[in-house]
Length: 181
Image 1 (cartoon, rainbow, N blue to C red):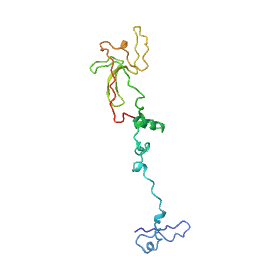
Image 2: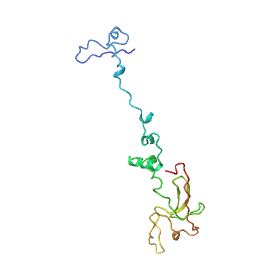
Image 3: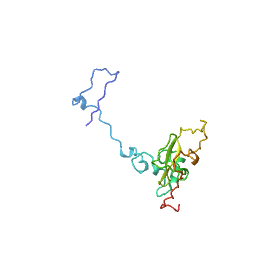
Image 4: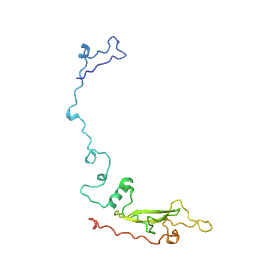
């Protein structure tokens, strides 16, 4: 049981002190306010996305029963300004894999060269290709900078000595259940 006590204000005489619980003065204190009627209570806000998780997820961007392709999902996310999670990726097919010289895992790379690992849009691993390191500048015999390829993929004529010259081949796409889309 709650008991509400009233405190004297500065305008009161100050002759009475607050009553201690269990005294006669406490028994004559104002009654507690009546509870609100059920119809006056505010309705709880609707649960976001049908559950208690307030974080927006893919259900926020798709209609029930809809089955869009991954490219359509990523495009919708980008249209709404979402560039994190799945929205951090480019739609499938918009950034094709780079094709270059295959570089065996056991081949020791000289300074300035790196292995570039990739995967297809359907998740297949692609053999590593040889690229120039981002901070590397190739020099000619006179120590003058050579023009670097814009994509930094090493052409056969600039391959390091001893590297077997063989271009990678991209794997065929894996058939999917939605192949007719």
